Image 1 (cartoon, rainbow, N blue to C red):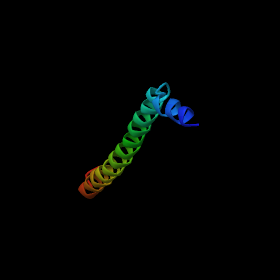
Image 2: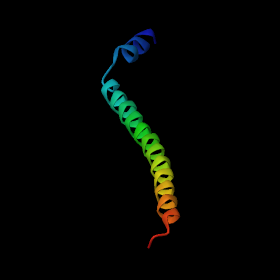
Image 3: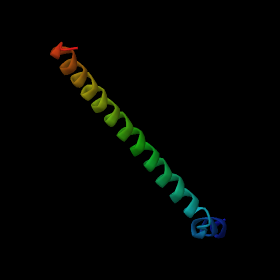
Length: 59
């Protein structure tokens, strides 16, 4: 029984796969957060630019 646990503990064949899954999930998560931050800021900039153009009234 202890030999089975020792073999399971020493087996690292799936460790690289777990690393890649964690790294990929982190990259996807950071990309999603970055997208929403950029989207919010660009919407605010677009609204400010639209308001400035509408305030000119020279068209």
